Amino acid sequence: MNIAIKGLAALAQETRLTIFRVLVQVGEPGLTAGQLAKELRIPNATLSFHLKELAHAELIIARQKSRFIYYSANFATMNALMGYLTENCCAGIACDSTAVCCDDKNS
Amino acid sequence: MNIAIKGLAALAQETRLTIFRVLVQVGEPGLTAGQLAKELRIPNATLSFHLKELAHAELIIARQKSRFIYYSANFATMNALMGYLTENCCAGIACDSTAVCCDDKNS
DNA sequence: TCCATATTTCCACTGTATTGGAAATATGGA
DNA sequence: TCCATATTTCCAATACAGTGGAAATATGGA
Image 1 (cartoon, protein in one colour):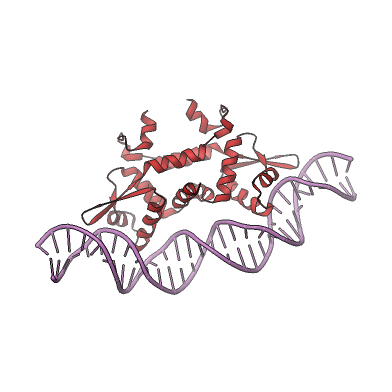
Image 2 (spheres, chains in turn green, yellow, orange, purple):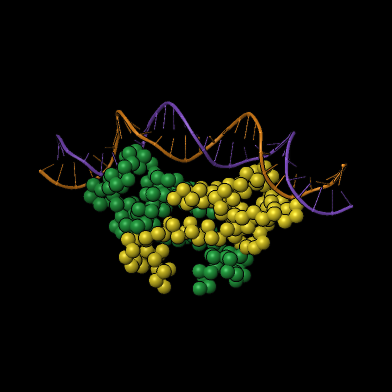
């Protein structure tokens, strides 16, 4: 529960959501803090703050290589978060066509 | 983008996440404000505030029946939110086994 | 219409998130 | 070792979210 709250809170912020989506889209091996700062035009201090928040929620992974730190999306956490939201959907009963979440499972 | 932020912010709060998950799990036809207040032991004013937040984010749907208002989860919004997070995952390239989000699609 | 009750609004208090400049720190190449 | 530069920490200011008691409002039954 607390993990989910942390993850959702981390993503519920424009700057962080932007950062996260960029990292989701580039996949491996991610981007350095500097590349992110430049591409997204975010001041270093601000970026660093948000990267910490995302890392603390385990939504991104930091990997040091030489003088650079590469950040990449943590897909495991992202999927766990989604699973948490849909857990026991509709009382476990097969859902009708209005329950889109279950359509996916049934299709 | 703003819709996603609203949705994530709405869920990034213990009380609201609890409410939402209960509604996801009961499915249709949902629960009344009073039932939620009683079951979750949330003061009326607090519950009303959070229901408004969730409704404003379109994560729940309110339906009046007689003197009661039934709240239920909005699965369409929930799924749109998830789609937004995984959009263009890994640059559209087929992901390897470490990218769980894409494993689901490939399996 | 009158009443019981389901739900929302009002309000003030408290706490926490976001921001970015400046300074500090860490790293590896020369 | 010394330096260039990548990244983080420090700090103070501003703004907004969460809480719940009390009062107001809405609804339908009698």
